[in-house]
Amino acid sequence: MAKSPQLRAKRTAQRIPRLPSQVTRAVAAAGDKKATAITVLDLRKTGAFTDYFLICTGANPRQVHAIADGIEQALKAVKVRPAHVEGYDRAEWVLLDYFDFIVHVFSPNARQFYGLERLWGEATRIEMSDEVASDQPARA
Image (cartoon, rainbow, N blue to C red; front, side, top):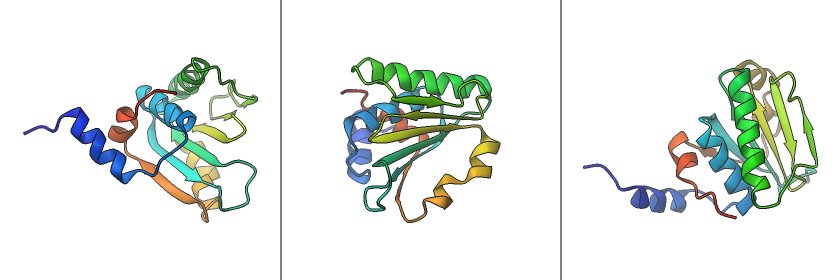
């Protein structure tokens, strides 16, 4: 018997640490655009310059653009805009800086090459399955 979306969301919510609403909205938007390997790094205990990294992968440049655009639009809907955007033209690594969190949308090769999860290994790593990301509420 298939699980209802509400039951799946309840079970998912119990396993995932509570994230700020803007990060949750960005995760949902990435999932809506079929981003893969969605990971949130909690950097609050590392003394980093931001609280969270949202890292995800797009299969090709067009999808990398779509993911970055989707996240930007979802946050713009709640009047949140990035302070800075980098890498959009090349679509290998798009960075959206929202001060409290930074979104990194990678191509598969760029993600493997730069290895942010490895570089920030002391951060708490929150793996978001594709199912979980699409189940996240997109509310403010």
